[in-house]
Amino acid sequence: MKGDPDKLGFSTRAVHAGQPPDPSTGSVAVPIYQTSTYVLDELGKHKGFEYARVQNPTRTALEENVASLEGGYSGHAFASGMAAISAVLTLVEAGDHVVASRNVYGGTYRLFPQILE
Image (tube, rainbow, N blue to C red):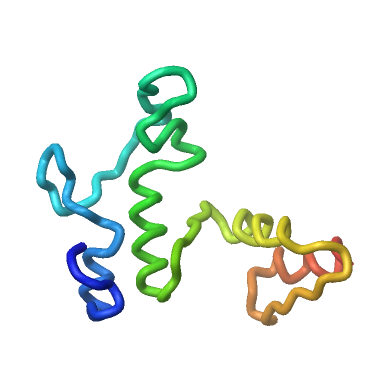
């Protein structure tokens, strides 16, 4: 996406953020990468991706796009809400306070008073 993202409109960022044209094909749409592993140049040296469960180009495009739309620096996408809340909860320590609305997923809502309290 060319130009300063802060000066581009929401619709432009929704269509283009995190989605540079493919250098090998020129495609402007991000392909869905259905591979699980990626070639390593040598042991421990990869070209940005090693294993799809950790990261892949499709998810990277989604994360960059949503971060741009939300005005953030970066983002992380998860396969489920429970995966997301589990990641967030790894950042808190005993005695910390978590603010959550009543309309979060029921499993998440029950997690606080029934498991973590």
